[in-house]
Image: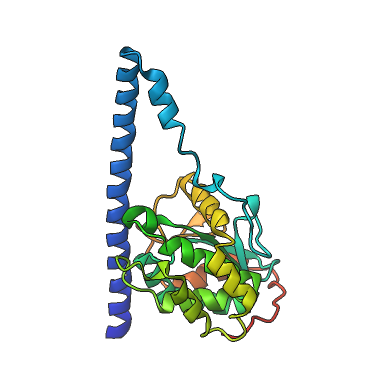
Length: 272
């Protein structure tokens, strides 16, 4: 194994560990807040102000409740929350939950993107992307939301895969909410031939798919998964924890799952 490959894998593992530690701390804070809220509710009932507390607690609602939900073109799955890449009839499905501000997601993409593209382009897998705004929740800001909306706008234009890769290739430090600036996302679109049209610019500027992204994040929160990236092959988690996934082992797993099955019908992918 070359030093470069070894360093890359170590960096990916370290980024994943750091991300999971942050998310565990966030989950602990959330549990503490829930317990504290329950105690306040009990005390409020005892002092005759339970109704006021109940009204206060019900004022928030789901983040996806505001605005109409507009899925991007070609979105699939329950409530059209999935962006598919690759042959619709591919024998295996790779499911990825990820956040464009997430450093562990970036490490995963840097290590696995060429392999994923090769498997998509030979009809071996269809990749299903679920866009998440976990870092916005952890650190504040809107970069995860804005980048996911822009990626959905690229899906409208049939250029999701290329723009998805450009975003990760230009990901800032997670503490630098650079993607909150929509002009940054529009400038990155110049790197994808044919993407930056008036329709795309309007979609990014107006946040056309913001409510859809929020609904996708709500779905992630209800899924039982609690970190990004979450990666599944045919419904089974294969990345993180005790799963020492590598590009080579991913290819082997897909080949084993696809044994005896025909490859999917591949259509041309817009140039990146």
